[in-house]
Length: 148
Image (cartoon, rainbow, N blue to C red; front, side):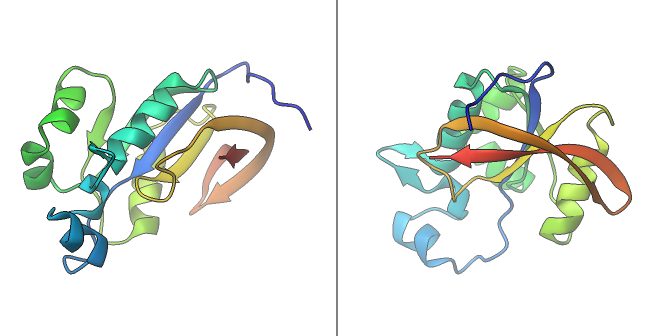
């Protein structure tokens, strides 16, 4: 398969909620949220947001979490939100509820890339194919993405 740039760039949803205050990665890094743990001096969530920004396949980015008090403490992350580089929304009671709420903020015709802030810290994004999907009655175009 070869990659192609989609006619409509994907909206990216980056899941960055803090669900475990005793996370060993966060504790070892001395941060209160795993997504804020630095890798080579840069918080994991910022690495993911930067990779998405550099991708030709990705347009608007929406950050779901971390909680507002933690966002206020993460100066680089908050400045990106304040500058309009990416959006922010509070997470919901579960990852699936958060993803559904985030998808509701994106136009029905917009393809969506859903990723986490911590599993892809060295990611590059390449679109492979587009398939139809549905989650909680929300019909969306979701891509199969190669993350490397």
